[in-house]
Amino acid sequence: MDADERKRRLGLIAKRRAQGVQAGRRRVAPLPQPDAIRDGYARALLEWLAPLGERVTARLVAAIPLDHEPEKRDANGKRSMSAELKGLERAFNRQLDREVGKLEAVAKKQAVRVDSFHRQAFAEQVRAAVAVKLPDKIGAKAIEQVVAGFVRENVDLIKTVPERYFAQLSELVARAGAGGLRHDEMAKLIAERFDVAKSNAERIARDQVGKLYGQINQARQVAAGVTRFVWRTSRDARVRDEHDALDGESFAWDSPPPEGIPGEAINCRCGAEPDFSEVAAAAA
Image 1: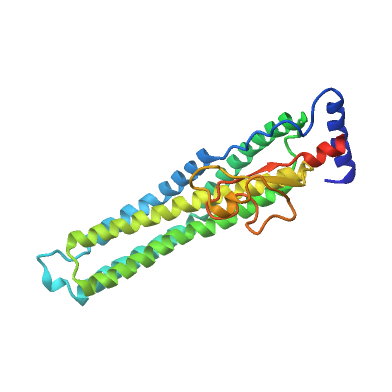
Image 2 (image 1 turned 180 degrees about the horizontal axis):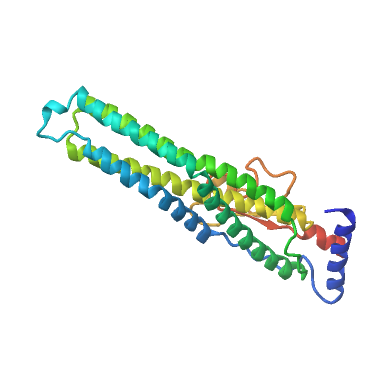
């Protein structure tokens, strides 16, 4: 924001104060968390992964030597399962190359939802605290860059889920050949590996939405002339000790604490409340 624009907005706040609005003294409502978007992103990733799990599980279980076929439960049986797994992985990777655009679209859709959710929530905070209506497009250029980075990073992260899945299955096949696992035991372990892959996808979705929300919050606050934020936790049993110690503390956006900005740490559900004390003082 240039100096003239900042001066104009501070002047508007001063005018509102003259009309009886106590700028900066009203309590700022907590910034709501985009939990529904987190859940929606997780569901979208699981829908994308589901066909992979079904296909791999069915074909790999079919390749497990049956308990009444001990002659196949040796190196030949292991090679058969290994070959089947490698073929499935090659086929999936070819499919993945064709679906990069689809993954980008999934990530972009969630990013647009996060931006819209934050724009409305932040506008309410500003109206309640300083009685100023912000332009809808404020911070648009900076947020566009944040969203583009989110899409790129998320596609790369999503790709790691099947990579880990196939690596874990490969280790399982190697152990099965040496350990002589029963057919039903091996089938159960294969299914469990996909449960782990689903958990990884869900964790990525929830963590990345939180990070994006924090970055968009920063971009929009700074564009609105807010230079400081107050750290607010979700104030429940899951808050980590280091974040609980930051609750209620004010920081400059360009000088955050070692923990970074709220939402940046893995699965952080904290929020950055705009600190209007500076604009309130300037408008006094």
